[in-house]
Image 1: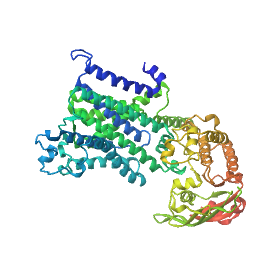
Image 2: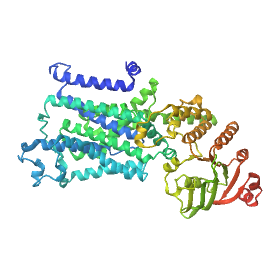
Image 3: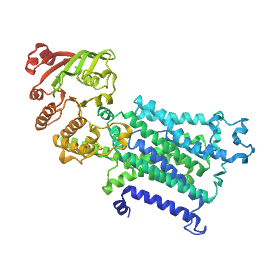
Image 4: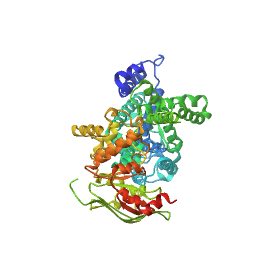
Length: 383
Length: 248
């Protein structure tokens, strides 16, 4: 059936179709089907699926830079978390005087720390529009500044990966400090409502779920537009032969900077949708392990396919939810094992392998593996 | 080429790596419309010279002028490429995950900015240009093939085709026939002569039969400087050249 769907609508059509079905079915099964029914989807499940979709969007953003441009970011969680914090700050301001200490303006943690007024960087976050602007602007600006220096100095490969990891680690340490004004270790939590709708209510949860589906569809549309344009071809070109790309006249640092910044903004939006659905944002989201997990999602789903990244995020996260319930202590071993197995036996990832089977358009990452194979054969013949 | 004068002028170029002088006050002038062969033993500085001309390496001393006006030592690779200097690497480097067609499309002379490529569309003139180049480099039948699946010789031609698409005034070609069959070598010599009708070409080559087939002025490099210059017969009669090539 998958085969026939793919033939008929292509991978993109199938992806949009699945998203549309999710957006319609999940709220329907949650709100219209009575709780006793086996078809009922619990409100907990709605929020959980919404969370997975945010992860899918982060994975898609990561695939844009890793799969198509060869930049292996081990710190994409930083952009996700910054978007999350921007949303969290808005939700904190929405609490108003209903906090434990009842202060009219200051969030509880600031009252607790004896702060007298809001720090300047919290101003304006009571407006939803300002907060939403910051959701894309803060990760975007950080990525732009980081990329400006890194790509101009031609830092590439594993060195770049290590710097991205250092970046997210430094941010984690910074956000752990109480003086930063972001709630330190505890982060931001105890949110009450958004636009006056309580966050815990089923309807709000469904609304966020649908918003997450829409955001993922939008991110996919943007990603497709980029990778199918001539700019997308330049990205793949510089991934495979960077100096050749320079010698035919492209300033590769600008192309990297563009896609890197777009990717960070998408990750920020994903983080902003994630926070209200899980009800908390804390410095743990900056942990390098979280970013590495995102890399594994993309590897499992299939690099350079966009759809694969999203699928990988949902599958691995679903597996994690089940696995950590059964054997919580060994999750990291399972995750590491999964990465090793995928690298050894499924180097193109799930979607990449399926596409090769179905004879569809080849994902970019698969081509290299194939070429190595051809060369090997040529060598054997030569010998 | 109608214009006369010097297209490329190198004067006193010195490049040292950790004290080792890869180029030692190298001076060289290429005329507009000229084809020049550069030969020399390993380590003579042929590739470093290419690196200096294309902006990959900055010289410690010396000037490099293109078309009399542009100081190449102050520009980066992309700027130099856009001025009209194309470079072919020794090992064929094409974009393996792209089709032959897309390789040529990317190389085609067109705005190279981020946003102009994001919204770029292929127009009829560009299609015609690509078709023409495909014909020239004998790859019309392989247009939709992935570059990764081409033979070694085809990759070399594709790379030359990409250079043609760039529409450069000066072409630097590093060992174009290394690893080619005799038939392919012959085709390549023909192709280069064809290209030379409208552009200046600098060929770095080891293969003496090929250099003889090109039948152009030869410059011999040795230890980062010019040792001899003239016709192939002239330089091969030079005792210092014989010593450098055979005396070890």
